[in-house]
Length: 61
Image 1 (cartoon, rainbow, N blue to C red):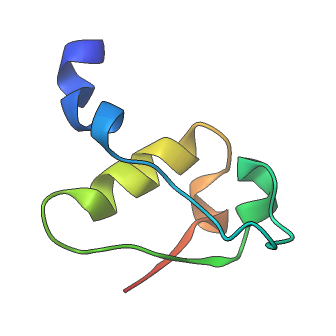
Image 2 (image 1 turned 180 degrees about the vertical axis):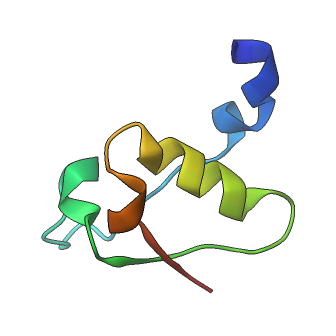
Image 3 (image 1 turned 30 degrees about the vertical axis):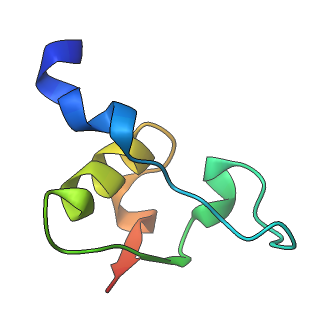
């Protein structure tokens, strides 16, 4: 399973230090900015699906 997620080690979801979001679940229904090239969009969704139901994941470019 890890071999199918090779890009996960080189990408992360980050927030500003003064952000009110501390854990992945805090991002429910919050637009998350992602780059739509190089698979970043798919990795962001896949990562958040481990913490949130898909209907609460909002991605924005």
